[in-house]
Length: 401
Image (cartoon, rainbow, N blue to C red):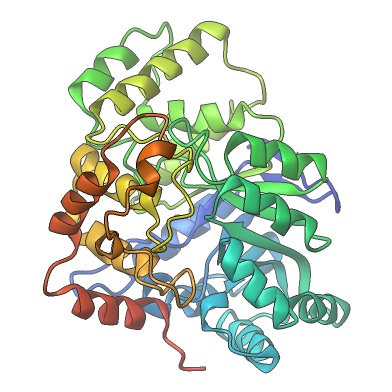
């Protein structure tokens, strides 16, 4: 196992972290605790020392499960990360209530790496105005949390405001060879590193979508490589190739995922890919983009929309459907992310478009945005939309604390 240091505290962290969001499940949807326990123990026994979870994962059961699985000596072997569900926080007292409940659920007296979950620009302003900086200072001073950070899903400009808004120890961003210029992106990675923040990467495999099923056109390109690697290893190696990255999270569901990722982590050195290999990955990325139904680059020149539609996020969800499938899952995520649950009270749905045309002149790709948003509505909204939003609220906002 290879390790990298957190810049501010010197912690040596395994370059692969275990993300506890996609644990194996039984037919009834509950965590398969026997299988998941074996996987996590195997990962830790073989050098993984960073475990990541959050309040809503697995319908609220991920944290309590980890509290059980890390007992009997395993808790001391890892750095444990979890996240405040900031969209559920209404006042300063809520922050303490969530943290104290999470300590109880995780069966621990401290959180090594505590994050504000799923920030965007607007939610950062809201939680900041509620006094989160003072809360983090107090929680660090009394030892309930050791390091403070945030996970991020907004745009690049707002990311800088969050980085500058507190003396963070680390951050967590989405980054992979398809999302180099989306959300925080490469510029955000470099900006965070320039402020001595450790950077934890989520979605290096785009939720597994870069690994299976892989379109035939993509596999044909991978087969041209001089060294044969799995699509998962190529994607992980691309992220590890960035020296500013500290830990890469993988949401492992099967034992072979753990074994494969551990093997890949033995060679995940920074700047270790050749120029020829990087060009091959660029070709794969270009082919994925070619296969996308809507040629949106995520530049966000069309934003802000006067009706609050998150145009790039709508198109990203639509493209994911046609490249990777999984409509049921995507419809719930669309409801959660754009229905005012994970991002605060404001909805950002495609159906809010009134065809004002403001976005048309701004789009450098000259996309017929209003017409494309109608296609998003047809796929992801309809008469059951409010029911899906209510279900997503139950899924992501279980406030039983």
